[in-house]
Amino acid sequence: MNLNGKDLNRIAQSDLGRSVAVTVYTNTATKAVTGTTETSMLDQPVTLQPADMASGSVIKATLAGVITTQVNITATLTLRLGTTVITTSSIMLPNSLANNNARLELTLRFTATGVWLTGETVIQTAAGLSTPFDRPITNLTEVAVDTLTAKQLDITYQFASGVNNLTIINTEITSKK
Image (cartoon, rainbow, N blue to C red):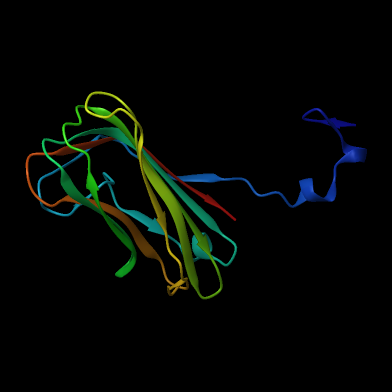
């Protein structure tokens, strides 16, 4: 017997336990972050249920868009689950970016007592930037989170000053158990 090109008599035990990523959020509109007010990069609330945060679960968020800066500027990225701040990362951005492609990837790995975070932001080369600009984002310790109640996931961005713009065009958040 054949299933998706595999002989059912030869399916490995590891194939039977493999989990599949499920999309829990996709943006429905672009989202612009300008100025000095902390602004959500998500165009609508994203609620994670306890099953999404069970020990061993993985949530991946991928955001893509364009960024423009007028001067060297500090930008702050914050990720929250409910009222708990999972990470806050501030960094000085290059000046004179002009609609450079920007990508943010975050991975949350849940344990029985909390969450670990890894990820990065990358600004691609274009006007004003000769090499890609990379910001690693990693928590060195687990953050305690109550995973037994639903939590709103939010990813925010904020510029320290000036006339700057980050427009998020595409966002996808997936859950894998």
